[in-house]
Amino acid sequence: MYGSAQTPDDSERTAFRKAEKKYKLDKSSVITKKPRKNQVKQEEDLSEVIDFKSILETDKETGETPPGISKLQSDFSRPVFCFEDRPGFYFIPGALSVEEQCHWIKESLGNFPQPPNRTNHNAIYGPLHDLFLAAQTQKVLIDAGTVNADANSTFTSNAQELDVKRWKTNEESVQKLSGDSCKVITASSLLRKLRWSTLGLQFDWSKRNYNVSLPHNKIPETLCQLAKRMASPAMPMGEEFRPEAAIVNYFGSGDMLGGHLDDMEADWSKPIVSISLGCKAIFLLGGKSREDLPVAMFLRSGDIVLMARQARECFHGVPRIFADTENAEITSLALQFSNQDDHCFLEYIRTSRININIRQVY
Ligand SMILES: O=C(O)CCC(=O)C(=O)O
Ligand SMILES: [Fe+2]
Image (cartoon, rainbow, N blue to C red; front, side, top):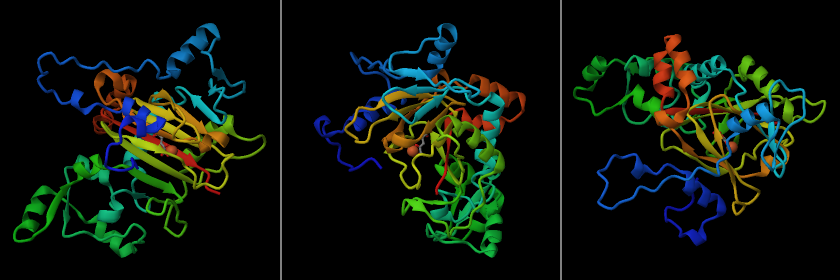
């Protein structure tokens, strides 16, 4: 997604790549090396990152918005902000309550990666049931060679039954392994490496389109209702948003989503409804060309972004996740999970971000 392995010099970089480079995590600042003598740590400059949380607060107090940003005049239940020069892009800060955020985090970890929904692990291990539960109960997967699950293969119910039995306890794996040349993979490492799951019509990443022949469930009704409600500020008069597919992205510290377009849906007048959960991130919204200077903004847990019409043609990406305690801004989420005794979810989300983006495909 990030082009060639060679690092082009700055003159060859597009404006989008330069912005990605500016905001991506500087890994050297995370590894606690003893600073070299006279080494001055470069202060990170986030002064140009638009902060809709503070824009919302100022709007509440004074009714004013910064130049170039306006509040949508609508009867929507919450304030919706737009960029005057980027039609079709909408930002709804704090659209979800903390209870709703917890609910969707649990769904994203416990239910959304369940077959027939596919995840990035399908291509290597085939469908995996109960990954989150297996990680909590310290299960392992014994990989006797690769399952050789081609990205498009459909698994028979028999194969799926076998798959349910694939999680083993550590002791079982020791017995099984003696004399065998198998590999043991912990469920918790697979959970950490979970990058995406797809709901509803399944998106085929290898072909970059929807493969309607793959088995799938409908988008869960409650997610469907939420997406319809949230899409309304971006919807053409009198039309209805039909959620048919969703991609759930899972980010850990240092992960990023490179600049891209989502152009495999038929009707670009319809929005993509994009929900942020967990650690704070930086979102880049560029123009129709990678050469256009992108605008950077913070995305926090509970924020919702809509991209419709012209905004569907704009490059966008997520160069940065703030997974450190100081900057993640998940205090209320952490409190809510602690009160609910949901420490396993808290443990995950403390250093992770989840994005659910919901689409009408046809
Ligand atoms: O993570 C985000 O906020 C954006 C996700 C996105 O652009 C996508 O999945 O196409
Ligand atoms: Fe996208």
